[in-house]
Length: 148
Image (cartoon, rainbow, N blue to C red):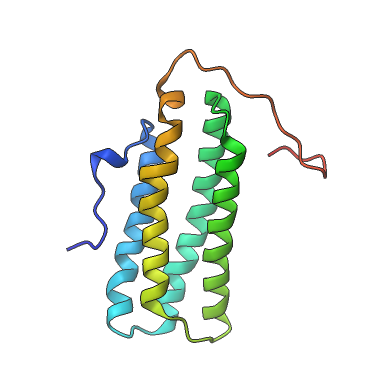
């Protein structure tokens, strides 16, 4: 049995983004039994590395879609993504350095964030993704000149 179950109310109206969310949930479900059984840290690290890589892809594509759909609060949403990526990267780095990580805390943190984020923050942009009248927001440049 999976620890986190995908439900229809998690849908954001985009098959690609929904599939991303499902993949992240799959990572969490793979991680959960490892955390309850004192699995070797190498296995936990492999799942964390996959989660980190996939989160980067997902965040990038979700942010692009929000901008293209004209979602006005995409910058604030991006800040949340940046904070979550920092958490995932930090936890993965701790494991790589051989530090003992509280596995249950790790799982709970990621699971709570994921479900809260999808059901709370991601639901806010759904009307923009599903509306055919939304206009893209202007491109925002970072101080280094690169597009976001």
